[in-house]
Length: 236
Image 1 (cartoon, helix red, strand yellow):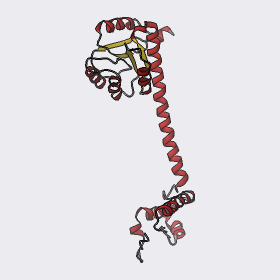
Image 2 (spheres, helix red, strand yellow; image 1 turned 60 degrees about the vertical axis):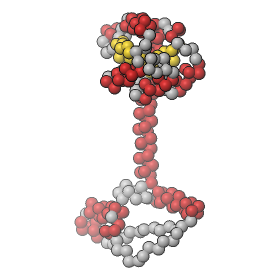
Image 3 (cartoon, helix red, strand yellow; image 1 turned 180 degrees about the horizontal axis):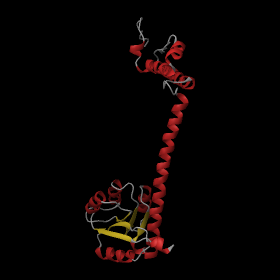
């Protein structure tokens, strides 16, 4: 079991911190982790971090909010906009509940006060942040697939599968909707009905696939399948 853990690939951590002494101490402490090993890259400015995010994949970002070229929650927002699928843990010298809550609400996985950081706590928070972020990403993906499935099921419940026109249920809903619009805005309602003669003879002589084609054509090309012998009156 221990050999399997040690064989795990390292996690790539982007440390964005302009205090070089603090960054070196943090890197030394985190580099001792071997389950899995942490590969830490330290950058000192927001611009360098944004460029690094474009150039490589990262498993987690450790972000100081106060940088030479950015400060406060704007630092997080800039990094977040370019790394939607990477968990971000904020480190700050500011012990501010308001700032911490704001950052978490905007997508940060956690907010740490630098003076309270110790190696054991930080490692636990980093691993939990990565795991939590992965779970949230999976939930978003599953939710998206469920939404698409529900839309397909709703479409199947309202449309005829062959012609993709409204079935009885869909037509009832459409007529109710249009009736409400007419009652509110006025106007008239026109219904176009197609009648295909001798469809049974076509199915018997040429086969049902040909009959199905004839059923699908009128809604696609009504101008080719019907002769309009009377003028359409504008009732509005």
